[in-house]
Length: 386
Image 1 (cartoon, rainbow, N blue to C red):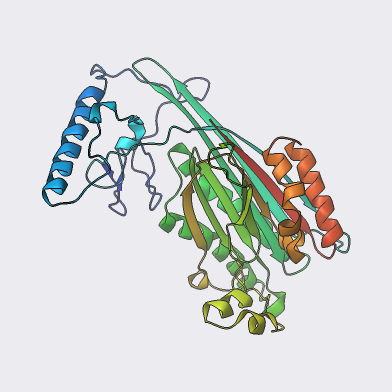
Image 2 (spheres, rainbow, N blue to C red; image 1 turned 120 degrees about the vertical axis):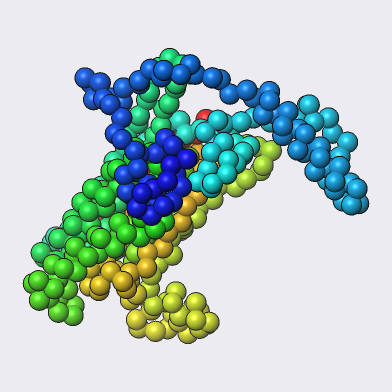
């Protein structure tokens, strides 16, 4: 484990940047002439992990725990089982955690095979300029060498913004945010996703850049530029989403395991920052909240206010099955366009009945048909697991 010199957080030895504060904690690895990470021979012979010893230790611990619980009259699922026949699989990388003590976790047998994506923005049918902006970045890293070294990782960053403030306002705010988020994310792609604290800092830095421009240009009230924000970042099976405003992220899953008998599922995994949801959180009845004229007014956006008033919603989770993500501005998802049409427009993409680009074109066409009043932008991200 490595101690961050800045925030004193504990990080795995392999990390070059702190996953909590972003400070550098290790020396950059040397690169070969191709710009790839060069594998350096170690002066100490590599010692393979003794899994038999590890399994024996676990077996003894489980037997001791079971004996103790039986002595106290507590029956456990392990009673009556031959522990030598338990199907236990391990992922070496799961043996370390950010805690001060080593933890051992039985890992999933699934891995991220690939990420495919497509993004598109459209001015819409009633606007003369497009204030939306987005970026989609995907990278893989492969390291192969002697002494049991074999590393292949996938990482993707997908950012979408819906600007507000008119010409030289919304367009500028969304562009500032996309560029700021992208630049601040780059160091973390060496190791991992940023932690929650660092992600807050990244988003607030983007907000501060827009806020400072508003102040320097003395923009007032509705003339102040701003933007919504949604972020989807993926590092192998690890995912983080973050958002400010009412742009959304959906995910679609459809388990291929017939034993589970799982139905295809659409889930909106962001929650709009608007007056309606704020009132519902305060206990106001849905019908009363919906009747307000300002029900869909934003309660948060990047740019108009100082960064200490920005509270982005952030969530971490792990991929467990093939998943299709949709990031979109409200020009696409208004009037329940996604909820009413996901089986015809998203599920076929997940099931590979149509390709991503065709599916994306169909979504933009749908948005212009249902919500022609606004710019509309969408990013599709298909994560395939094996």
